[in-house]
Amino acid sequence: MTDILDLTVVIPVFNEQETLDELHTRLVAVLEKMARPYEVIMVDDGSTDGSFETLCRLNSGDSRIRVLRLARNFGQSPALYAGLSKARGRYVLIIDADLQVLPEDIPLLVAKLDEGYDAVSGWRADRKDTLFRRAASKLLNRYIAGVTGLSLHDYGCSLKGIRRELVGHMVDFSHRCRYLPVDMAMLGGRFAEVVVGHSERTRGNSKYGMLKLVRTAFDLITGITDAPLRYIGLLGWLMSFGGFAMGIKVAANRVIYGNVNQLESVVALFFFCSGVQLVASGMMCEYIGRIFIEVQRRPYFVVAEER
Image (cartoon, rainbow, N blue to C red; front, side, top):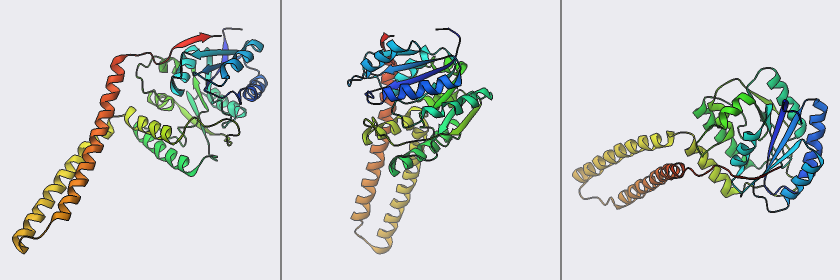
């Protein structure tokens, strides 16, 4: 295989054995039609369903398919970065293995990179997801855009294209809370967005249930900025002012109307203040926990085998 490659496609894989053969067939057909030197890096993230064995079979029949096996299930982001660290292509394309985004749309991203853009993100304009997922995605897109200053319609789309120079900077990051679209945006450069297709999952099960989606959202909120801490401080000042004003009102009522029973108001205020304090404490504990994780300096991923 030549060391001078135009394209590297990185695919994180976790228990996607049912889709891998079709993914390989469709992906190779697209890449062959583009007639550009390429490699495909498939990263097995601790699968337990036979995905790794399928990847090894694909590798044995096609030398352009490279396979990495992580020592355990590290998560989607570490698997992505493991693949990025091995990429040799001038352009690096990223796609999930579940076939919900279409390999046939890869040429759209490559065309934008050829125009001189540093990174390209897919935009699932017609998403085949639940209303909850679409609404949550829209809120997170707005939040990330506010933090990074880069407005994209669909930060969460797994189909992305990045120039090798940008990838080189990204793999040098040392922080543990990595979210690839945010890391791309933080580095700056020229970004483009292209509308891509999206289909319903027909094989296998989604790896993002409700609890994992909530966890991912919370990681994003606390992992890319300290703004929530500042908002908590502002809320504390507002609550202090509100409590002071309410105290004056209660005192005035007692002076004007006598000893009026204010138990309900006091109890409501107590529970409101206690709730906000608990939320604030939880948020600060989350940041402290992140500091604890960072200072441990555990490896972000461990490649157990490479083929």
